[in-house]
Length: 376
Ligand SMILES: NC(=O)c1ccc[n+]([C@@H]2O[C@H](COP(=O)([O-])OP(=O)(O)OC[C@H]3O[C@@H](n4cnc5c(N)ncnc54)[C@H](O)[C@@H]3O)[C@@H](O)[C@H]2O)c1
Image 1 (cartoon, rainbow, N blue to C red):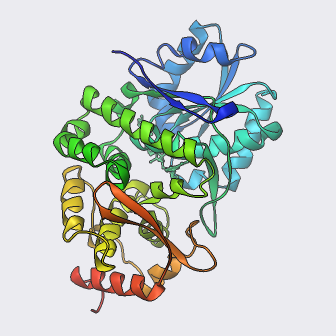
Image 2: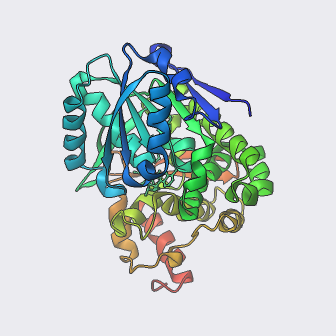
Image 3: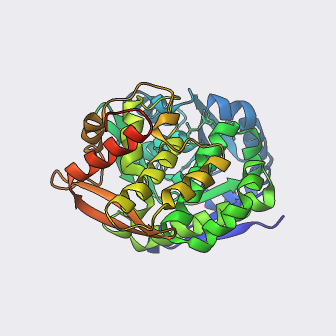
């Protein structure tokens, strides 16, 4: 199978995303030209280590590259101060020098944490992303947003630090649990919904194949998602404008994640799935979107096995007013006002700043009442 290349064009910080099979087996070919000495430090988590670390270490060794690995516990809780400190100290303990390269082998948690550790270690060392979840391959490994969570909210402490290469090896997805694959699929569908109607149509014909692990369909989905993200990031690296569109579904979604304690009760991609359906519903209520698009979006996401409504969450949720409060920790809030990504149609989204809180509350009350979760 050929390797697809997607270029992220950021002047001195440009890099390639390579997408294909067997990339880890042949990692030396890709990584060696970027190393100043034949050494690489790896950060991963226990699940990924069990399935893929040996293969990576063996392939590095075959290319004459020595490596040392830190294995962290899996899950969102790892993305915090404690494991940031552990990662920095482990990397220093491994003897990582200013010109060395750190490899993040894992999902978005490992990528975000390792990228941030690399950004601050010795005031900045280079890092390579080897994303192992579908979500990480189509979203979190690209674009240089790194960071950890604080008790005040998600991703609130971090830095922009671009990787020097991304290796999206499609083979690793075979060990990814189905629920995680679906969570990643929500971010794939997001690209179609926010700005690429033909891609959404294509997904509508291929969602089952992607979920079943069909390599050709998955490879195409990862490639188009990365192309869209690369284009948006190249235009607006630090999110002063259009990059915010990538947050379709996230203002609603983040509030739901916060309400469920950033736990396995609701994965990030699942929250985004529900949030996107809400964003389309809210757009319709404000008179922007065409009627019934939220139902079309929900029907599509359900085919990937995703939750699409608040009532799908198996936990007691706060009332609509408390959910609105949680939205104010969203990074897009400005001068105490909420920002939403709304949609006029599938493939046509826009940024709505200063959205009236009363309207958000009215929408949530109506949405939750329809599902028997709040008084109308
Ligand atoms: N930086 C960004 O731009 C950006 C964008 C979107 C999301 N994120 C962040 O990404 C994180 C979510 O990422 P995620 O969904 O990858 O979560 P994750 O890193 O927790 O991975 C999900 C689970 O799958 C396991 N896993 C990963 N790859 C596997 C494989 N190949 N085989 C078996 N198990 C595997 C992990 O151990 C974990 O248990 C969140 O913290 C979110 O905030 C960041």
